[in-house]
Image (cartoon, rainbow, N blue to C red):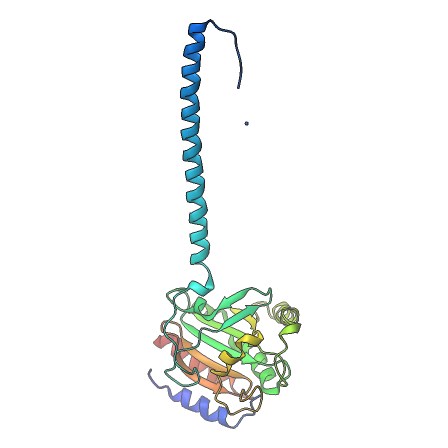
Length: 261
């Protein structure tokens, strides 16, 4: 991946910031015989029609099942992942994320073969009570322009509880309140691709996105963020922490990446 001067500047800057249902009738015997044969024939036809109908229903049911299976996030294609997802060139883990309606998502949903509109993914892990996280979340409301969305930027904002640790038992209610607040105040820029949270079983996968430099969750620092090439799910840029004055560099970085990808 081509190196950008702004990427270097951005990373250098980050180093100094804190992270955190029939009918009857009478007939003679001959007619009765004919009627009997006719009825038998009609019965055979009805049986055949019934079998055909049953077959059609069965086929429809199978088709519906196949359609449901093909749209299951678990069955979406995804590249083979690397051991970690915290270095340039790593393949991002296909992590499981739940949204504000408690609907399950796999990161594979934003892999370009599954989502042609996806070009550049900005995956952000944040905490509710993290100072640098608050700065980043406010900056996102300015960075997330409609133009970037049209060009293929997907911002996935994942809340992972407090600095003291995850609190999935409070989700998705807490997440829904946060999303509603952002979108009500900033209807255009506050509507990210996904507001999500992680369940406890995903914490081991989440750690693969961290450098181990933090003290939270055995080495997670907040915010942790990554720019990812949606065509390969390769990590382009990895960072931990955020601070004042990062809007301009971030916008320059996004524009350059969208031009290149």
